[in-house]
Image (tube, rainbow, N blue to C red; front, side, top):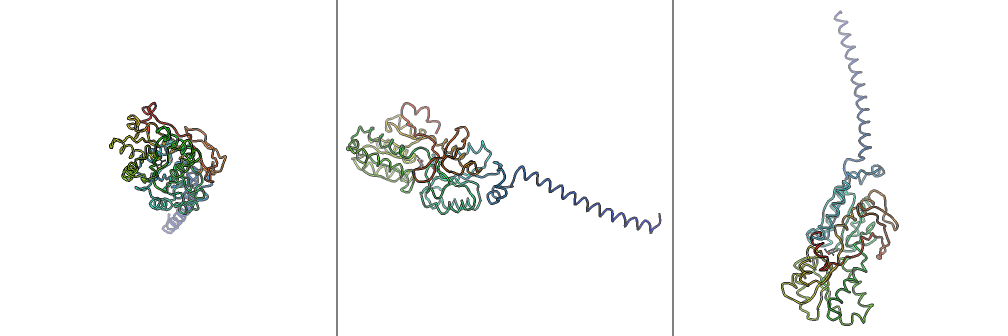
Length: 374
Ligand code: RAM
């Protein structure tokens, strides 16, 4: 082999190497693209943040593992809210969905709006909110829906215009009427009634109180000697509820207190017990909080539903909306895990809702079996 030959050889080898290299690069690129397509089929998007804003990805079947659902409480310190979230999270674990527990430390709409804005910036897939005000969250929730985020209310509703569906614990009319009937029967039809509510803007409590008043007004003879003396607002805050209970007790005509809030009921029970008052109490309380008061007769009976089930149902309704199985229209049907099938119905507020079931009565005969559950 001559020097010239070898130089030409080298030149040829270099050209060959270059061609080979180019071919390998092309093959590698084709291979990578194929790999990307496969990955994309298995998991359409990398993060939930990208998911909600990406129309192509939304058209594909959603992989539950990519979803992020936000639960917005009235107030994170309220144990009832924590039980609701427990059910929400249980369901999320079944479906491999990431959940966020958010909420203010005081039940105000202003703080909820701030939290909602953060969740919109985060581009979560679902916002499920129990509202501190029926209307105040509206514009923010509308913005969330415009961005493609599914929005539902549960427990305490928002205006039907600002939600896709509401998840209701039980028929508000029944919740209101049973408490008023209980108060009447507890004092044997003789004695004034005081109500200790949550915040003055809470849509669930306000609706229940409307039905309590309707029950009274529609049956004037029955309630002739059990007038409604005063409605106080304890703001779902233990201290304010305690002070407001003292305020109600200052009126000697009040012989029974209805507290349609778990926070208010516990505070009122404590005040009645510590002051040795013979005023009775009923309302909506958790068995875990209220069993000592049921046992000592301060609360002859009370009502509630299973908050863990309500949170669980809220999750599955949200998932059905996010996956497009339902739109929140009347007649939509979805399965809520172990709770079975639910149907979306007309709501008395003009929107649509899903009902968990009937309120449940707790008394001395069954409190023992429920006090460790919620
Ligand atoms: C309180 C809250 C909640 C209500 C229950 C009964 O914890 O106000 O919204 O549903 O009571």
